[in-house]
Every structure is written in C-alpha cells, then in structure tokens.
Length: 59
Image 1 (cartoon, helix red, strand yellow):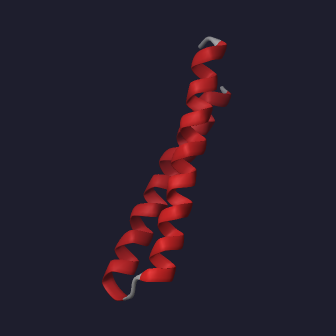
Image 2 (cartoon, one colour):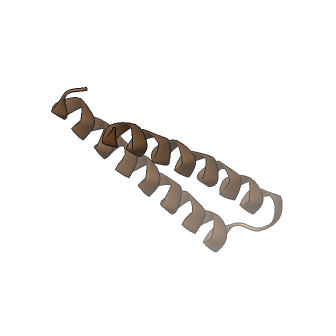
Image 3 (cartoon, one colour):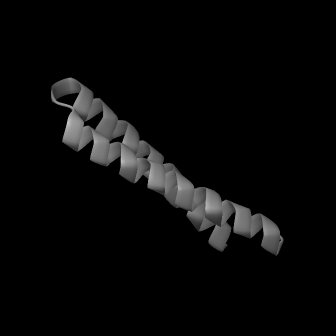
C-alpha cells in the first residue's frame, strides 16, 4: 500500500472514531432508556470499525 493510501485510511479512521465519540457523548447527555442503549451500541460498532481501519492503515 502506498503512502497516500495509508494517509487517507488514517484520516478516515480518525474521523470515524471522532464520530463515535460524538455519538456516545450525545447518547449519554441527551437520551434515556432504549434509545440511549441503542445509540451506545451503534457508537461501539463504529468505534470498532474505526479501530480496524486504523490497524489496516498501519500495516
């Protein structure tokens, strides 16, 4: 993988992880009950995806 592709993957991973942090913060501050749990689960899945993209960009 060339350097530019690694750079774009790294930026994508950072943005995806930032989105998950925003989503979990929103879920905990503004929602209650089932919606809070659902948004937290979605944020966790997005965080895992960002982590995997980050690992791919390193290797």
